[in-house]
Image 1 (tube, rainbow, N blue to C red):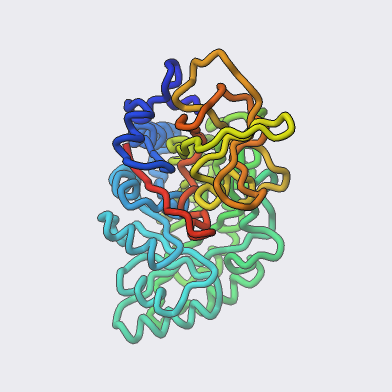
Image 2: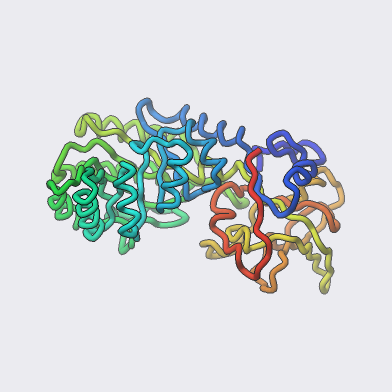
Amino acid sequence: MDSFDTAREQLLVGGVPLTLLAERVGQTPFYAYDRGLIAARIAAVRHVLPPGVLLHYAIKANPMPALVGWVRPLVDGMDVASAGELKLALDAGADPQGIGFAGPGKRAAELRQAVAAGVLLHVESARELQLLADAAQDLGLPARVALRINPDFELRGAGMHMGGGAKPFGVDAEQAPGLLRAMHGGGLGFEGFHVYPGSQNLRAEVIAQSLSRSVDLVLRLAQHAPAPVRYVNLGGGWGIPYFPGERRLDLAPVADALAQAQARLRQELPQARLVVELGRYLVGEAGVYVVRVLDRKLSRGQVFLVTDGGMHQHLAASGNFGQVIRRNYPVAIGNRLQCAERETASVVGPLCTPLDLLADKSDLAVAQPGDLVVVFQSGAYGASASPQAFLGHPACVEVLV
């Protein structure tokens, strides 16, 4: 929220007053992403990354085509998780050499597409390895592969645990030597490793520890590698603050840990390039979700602002996308920022379910039908992560400003 201009009656998004932007878009609800804020965040990350560390954008965070096209020249590569995202990256002009393809359930056709495109496959099972060998033989092209490892440790404090324990992601660390031995020949071109313990972490010391332990694991497994290690993707997991009491991630310890990781890799695996994969951290705070108040209702002393958008378009803000205890995203009446008259109100959507809740008993400016409610921190895992077909309401619009 701090990144947007709120020192006036109306929110400015990309320098455009909110009510004017709504007219320009032509409808509510809509998502708006500020290209200037995205570029500034990428520049800030570049500033702290040690020289030589590559920055990749994880398309799953926000696959809006215009946004992907905007980000593409600002980063060193892109990470995709489906053939659809692979098409997005290629259409945006991404170099296939800088595209990594991860995901635990890649279809045979997707693997063939990836081999044909020349991108790096993050292998997550013995099945995938065999399918890639078959595709390489059929197409007469080498299959570029990196082994995704399910580490033998967990990233404490992560919003979602992607590694450690029993997981569908990657290959368990203890099984990796066997798969590495199976990569000899057969059209498989081994390039390195991918380790991604978890996401949405705000504790720098935990991310730093994870980086150190991930490098330990890579160096241990590199002894079994069929070729020199040229690629080490240590994921990201950098979080952004969503809720009261959360503090911004301190990048200094993370940058120090990356510098140490890079130094160790240069000493032990001199051909390896270190990759950091970020999605939410690059775009999450640069987006807002905007809905219009349709009705103002008073029910037994509680004010409800009924809007034209809700959980079907912003599942995460409703608390139904991984929250254990529901908490409100930052919310404001975007065209009444300086209104002195305040109230406690709940913002709900048009769906006939009590789950359709965007803000529960929040301190807001007094709003009337026609006013615009803004949900901040909405640049990642918004429209594409929501069940927009639910109950047959119109789809929302996304714009890059």
